[in-house]
Image (cartoon, rainbow, N blue to C red; front, side):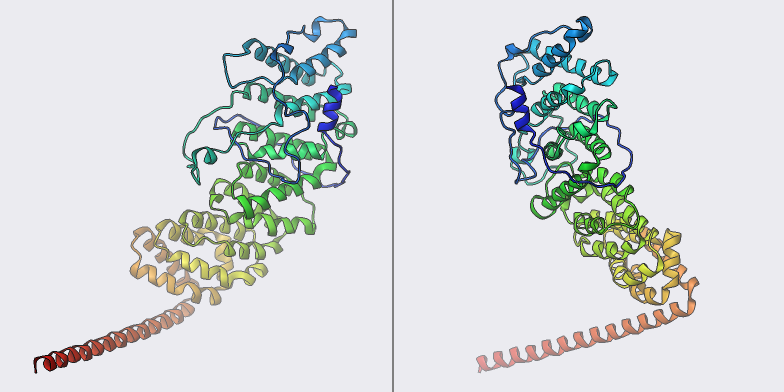
Length: 488
């Protein structure tokens, strides 16, 4: 009966091959945060495993079994199977005072399974189906509602220290450790393992990335990366599944707890892309990574997102133009913190940009930079001025100064005359002096045009004020005439 349950829980998917190499796996660690999660990421897949999401069985089935080392060799296989079946019993952690003995027995049994897989002291390869079935029963569970759903708030303060811990983590952590040891074990034959670690299993594993418990996401990140590196048949499927998570996050929910970890996995995958880069990978950059700059919560994963984008530009310099234009498309208007992040990413992209690609986008780029220079928020203006501390950017600007200086000259002069922050005023003076030394004739020409423009603006303002004064005089005369008529 148990084998039937496991087979129904893991339906085998079609085969896909992809020869791309990826980078080494990530190490994992524990971070204590709150634990909650969203609903399933993929609506097209069934939300519950058949028969595995049933209520916890009677706790009495968890009984103490002797260690494998203490039984005869001929009896170890049967005992190992009994231990796996015992670990399929789910414990109720809603009450910490109930089933204490059973919980401890299961915990010790799980630790013994970890030791068996890690030490290779016992040939467990014939029990792979049962082992993966036990892992599925424990980790593929109904996750609790997200914190914003419990509180009714639209957003959650990222600085709020809510350390709610899921009590079942005492067992979940060991189960994740078993899965990770299984994936990296040299005893595991890929041809056999892919029957059980199939597309359905991987998809349900990725749904768990929406957990609010960072410890769980760290394990998931490590395990998924190891699966991607070891199971080449799953690589295209994993990339497509990550794409779908990003699309749903960007265009539908704008809420997902695992975006940062998924981007970290993608950073290692991008690092292994072969050149010339496939069209599929370029589309991922344009359709997924660039739009990820749109959500309000971009600051929570921006560092990993920026690293992924910069890797694309470093591998293929021709992608600098669409990347910069994509950043300008999603440039924030009222969020100053996002503007600072965008300016930092822009500098990293420009460091890997070659002159031909720079020329294609420099006009629209420096019109946006000019707006940042005049930002009343001093951090935005400072960060924009810091671009001129980068030698590569200075060389690009110097080669195209005749087109760039006229665009930003007005912004520099306005900062000198009217910006309230002293630091911005000093940085602007340095940039202004740099252009003056770079091309004095061009600088004087721009200054002359600026003064003429200011003179025309002053003349227009004087005419406007004179017109208003004439209207006020006419209106005053009309009021006097009406008063005289009323008196007469």
